[in-house]
Image (cartoon, rainbow over all chains, first blue to last red):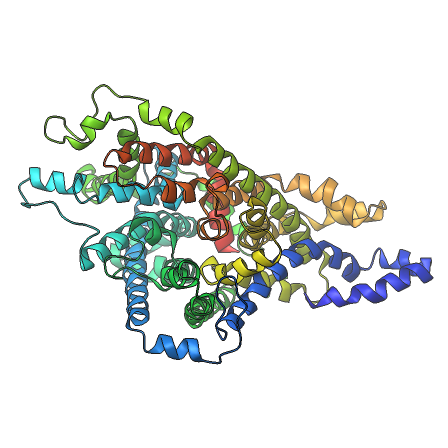
Length: 319
Length: 302
């Protein structure tokens, strides 16, 4: 991205000395600059610049329709004493830890099931992916209807079975609402984890299992000492993605609860939208969003570590 | 990074899905308990919301709220009233069109930019190519949730607020890192010798890209295209923030904001809206399952 500056000397050269121009045409750095230009322009204008701008905005008191002035750490000090902000941090961590752990467990289990000898394997695999294909908001709306306070099909079924007396208020009670959104998130996230881990499992040679079985290894031992070590790098990457997207989740919560009841399901992203866009306090919203960055960096660090380890395991110097 | 990964896939492909492996060691009852029952349960849970969505969207209103006379798990006298109402009495077709327009526009832009970038990174090996590759991977990890506030102010400054064009320009920031990363993997599998031959024959880099590399990378391009299209269709927070007027909204935003009134009869049309909004993607998916899978796993594995 720093190569952008070289365009100035290049133009002079092309005007003054045509022979240099013909040499430049085959210069890989010069050609690459033009090839990188469209992608670089998009990413700098709409990703890198807003990222920096967001951090800057978190130090101002900008509101919608009015430019902000620098106020130092005021937004952060304000948030530090704000119990709703801390509640949203708590919710986000709870949501991420619980949902990611269960997604990983069920996803790995499902991947192991799908990796076995099955009739209609391809068909089953494509069915598993459907929750991932359908737009999150639209499936969240379906969950909203399933969780309806009056006409919930779950309440109805449980009442018919005689397990409960009254309708369950899925999205109306604090912990029930948390559980419900976490369930919806797990439902949506399991296919991704399962299918990517399945792709990893398929690269494990079956002869390793055969050899281990001959040596008398149990199912658990085969999983623990063959599958798990060979799968570790891909687990690291998949879980980084999973944690990252769960941590910054917005749409599922917004479609289901909008942060309610009594802020019990507000995540940092939804709180940031609430404060920044709906209440119009852009500076404060940006501060909440910026507060997510340290967590983000931690996740990226883990991913990086996972990839390094993968390279090292394969013993390849790469190209 | 792919060189060492891709050959490893080959044995798995040769082995195929129908190889018996060690499964003959298992008895049938054991397989039923450890494999079919858990798998069946998971599949039912994964599919139930869709079944419910379809069922609700064709149920007459009185059956929706009367769960005692009618079995809620089935429908008698299905009706297309909800879907009809959706298509002819609301702006739904318009929202569908918006979503399609934004998704196609952003995807095409991103694929063009990604092909160029991926080719440059993988094959031109310019100074700093590796660093740029890593930066693009990091760009993939920057979530929209931390960018939407500053982007709203950037979009405002460019005078694009409330215009679908703003989404066409912003979505590539999600799509380019993903597709570039995916295409880098594909380009690496194309033999270098082909390009060398073309270079000796006097082809320019541009000719090599358009006549050799791109035609050979078509499966990768399809994967990148449909996956990007899906991501666009799915995107919510930017569309919610940047679009204000009802007519300009995309399907996910419109459903959440425009249908939600206090009416207890809203569910039929709401589910019909969710169903119709998902159909294009499900149809696309049905035709390109393998491409989806390779897009999803490819981007993670590189």
